[in-house]
Image (cartoon, rainbow, N blue to C red; front, side):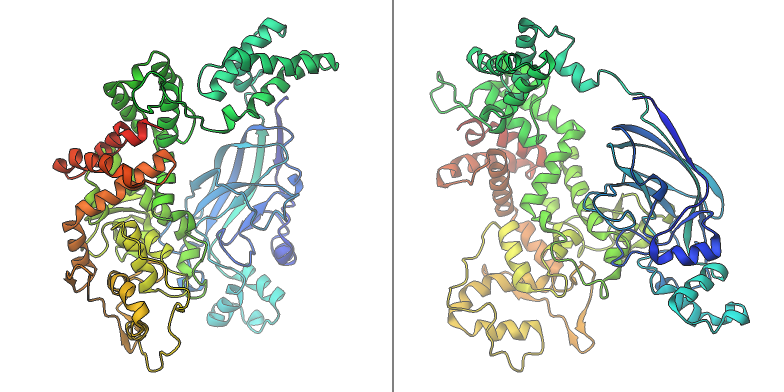
Length: 633
């Protein structure tokens, strides 16, 4: 399709809640963004072009240019009113929107940030985004580090700073009029969009790259279509397609041709048939018939390795090594592991494995209370928490560092919001607030997984913390010794807890039940060590003013500790147990099954080979790939 250009210079209609005030004060000469994406009652969190609500006419890349202006970062009001950090430069972003899903000024289920730029203060500046938009989607502009919520700030500003407004408007009443007065005379932090142009689709290649890859300019006659289907099936099935498989696909093509369809459509139906095949939908793992054990053949091994480290089909290099059989040789296999891990595509392993191992996929399922923990929403801490753990894991992988750093470390990765949560905001400069930096930690209480906010938040319920839940998390994911399920006839917490003043006293009463004692003596102590961290991982010393937190305890191995730092020291001493757990998890993730008793010799062999170097992370993965459970079915 030909490229088109759209230009918007006025009549910027705002959403219903702001429409009257903006029309009265600004005559809709520009659009205004006030708040971030995580407000629970949006009033200026998304700025859609309502005149372009039907979206772009074709899939493709579009150039979006915006004349933007960041105003009032330096304002005379209490920053707590807005819930944002005035030290951070304002950022403007763009997300896609689909009018048929919901009103464009509201959040939508799928809205990735397609672009993000920092704006200078109090100066109009053109910024450019080059983004992909599917047909029907329209760009919506966002203010990622805007106010947490703007709905109630107008009245707060007018009431608290009444003397800064003209005398004739100080007694204004009513929500609508209050908005208008503060918009006209106040200094609310905001981003104004004065002009927007959209151009595209840009550089439309025809045929598209995917069409060139699949069709390869072969003729649409039976021999050409057979070649196309054979090449496509080999990619889809992750191995050379057999003659009988190609014959079945050609049968589909022949039926469609006889029904009067065009050769092109008949070929596409043959491709659809390949995508419906079990050979594509399932990871079929045949064994080598000539091997003395149930060893995977080279193509199955290539698929298992690629899905382990890249979460996708093998590339040409891996398939070539499978075709000549060299992949079955340990030296080649290790070389391929190192190649795959060195690629940015290995981020897929980091993301998926940490989600599975640490249960980070559940982060946000029980979101913290917005009134109690406003920072969690104002600064999108949920995404930042995940990113910290991912970057930390990727760093260990890239440096082939010891997995002991998962237990204790003197550094982490954080943006300014996380650094502020960790009481070291100065570690990330305000001008780089949204980017992640490697930062040094001032003490040992925060280093390692047990000090990372992602783990501490996913092991809480958003309202309060529980030593039981966090204790179980440590037993399962650090020590690899999950407790038995509670007996069916024992409630989660004994109702007879009258007189308990703290969580420790409550659980002591619960353990008075003999049926509960055996498990809770293992669960509760490590959980208490984390009680200094609140439901989003912020440090605290009291539950309430009159209830101090006690973190001392004794593990079932009779190792006593006073706080989280001493617990970490104990865990480092038990690094062999942690390494065993992590190896088990890596093998289970790689093979797609639980490890059983018969797999223990292989796990022991992996640990024996990696122990001399303190279980370096990449070495551990290499030995997992070389192990019998990984190479056999």
